[in-house]
Image: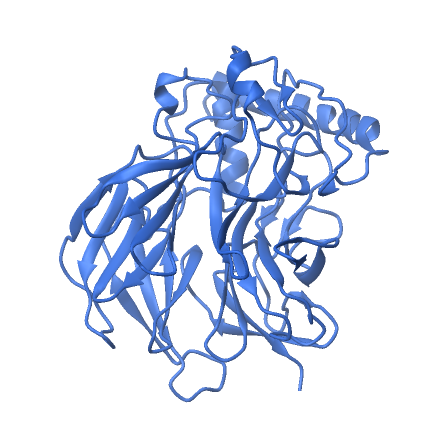
Amino acid sequence: MSFDPSRMFARLVAMIGASAILMRRFSDSAHEPALGSAPQIPEAKAQAIPTLKMPSAKGWSDGHTPTVADGLSVNAFATDLKHPRWIEVLPNNDVLVAEACETPSPVKTAFDYAIYSTMKRAAAVGESANRITLLRDADKDGVAEVKKIFLEHQNKPFGMALIDSTFYVGNTDGLVSFNYEYGADRIDGVGTPVVDFKPDGHWTRSLLASADKSKLYVGVGSLTNIADQGFEAEEGRAAIFEVTVNNGQARVFASGLRNPVGMAWEPSTDVLWTVVNERDGLGDEVPPDYLTSVEDGGFYGWPYCYWGQTVDDRVQQDPAMVAKAIDPDYALGGHTASLGLCWMPGGTLSGFDEDGMVVGQHGSWNRSTLSGYAVVFVPFRDGKPSGPPRNILSGFLSADEKHSYGRPVGVTLGPDHSLLVADDVGDVIWRVTSAT
C-alpha cells in the first residue's frame, strides 16, 4: 500500500479532534441545556479545531423501533427509502416523501477530508436520489402498500406544496412548479422555474403556503457557518423568502436566520414560526438552536450576533445590524439540528392535550456530548411556547453515542390522526398514533 500523506494527516486531525472532544466534554459538563424563553447560555469559547463528533449510521434491525412516549404507539409506515427528508400529504391522503442527500464538496485540505469521512460514516453525505416518492395506504392499516416514484430528476428536492392544480418543489437551486391533476400518482416533465436560489451550503429549501394560498414561504439557509467566504457569497441566503404565487415575485420576508428549515403557522394568531440551526464552533451550548415567530422585515442576528445581541467577534462587525437583531422566542438547546416543524392540535396524540409545535431534531455534530436525535413537542398557550419540550420519539441514538439507528427530519400530521416522521438514516417513515 502506497503512503498517502493527506490520509495520514487527516487521521492525525481526527485524533487531535478526539482529544479536544474529551477536554471540551469535561469543561462543558456543568452546563445545563440552553432551553426555553430565557435560556442560560454559557460564555462562548471559540474553537481553533471545531468539535467534530457524529455517530456511525447503523439503521434499525428487525423489530427495533424508536422509543415512544407513554400512551403512544409507533410503526413503520414505509421502509427501504433512500434518505427520506421531508413529507407532504396530498388532499387524497397520498403521502409524498422527498428523497435527497448532501453530496460531497471538493476536498481541499486534510481537515476537509476528515470532515467528509466523518459525514460519510454517519450517512450524512452521499449520492442523492433527487426524487419524490408517493406512498399510499389504500387499505388504511397504517402501512403504505403502494410505493412508487412520483417525480424524479430533481436537484436535491426538499419542500413541497400543492396550491390548486399546481405542485411546487423546493430544489436547492430554485422553486419549480408542475401541473398536477387530483389523484395523479406521477408527474412527468421538467417543470417551470419560478424563483432561482443559490444552491448548496445549507441546501434545503422548505416550503409553506399561506392560509389563502396566495403566497409561498421558502427557507434558504446560509452557504457557510459565519460568512466564511465573505458577505457577497451570502447575499440572498440565511433568510425566509415570500413568493407571490400569481406572478412569481419574490422578496426577503425575514433575514439573519442562519438556517431556517421547518416552518408552520400558529393558527390562533396566524403568525409564521420557524426552527433555525445556529452557528458552530463556540461551545456545546453556544448558541442554542431555536424556535421563533417570524416578523415581516425582521432581522435575527446572523452572522453578526446571536441571542441577546451577543456579538460573535469572529465576524467583521456592523453595530447597526446588531442593534436591530430580534431575540428568538424559544431556545431548543445547542446544536440539536432542529429541522422538522409542524403544528399539532391538542388531543391529536394521547397524553398531548395541549396545542403546540412538533420539532424533528436531526442531531448534533458540533458537540462533545451529542444532543437532539429526537422528536419533541413544545406546548403553546396564547400563541407562545408555554413549557419545556417533551419527547414524542427518542431512542435514535445508542447509549454510548457511537451509533445512530436513525435521525429524524421532517414531521407532519398524517391523514388518520397520526404523526409522520421522516428518518433519513433508518430510511423509514415512522407513524406515531395513540395506543389502543
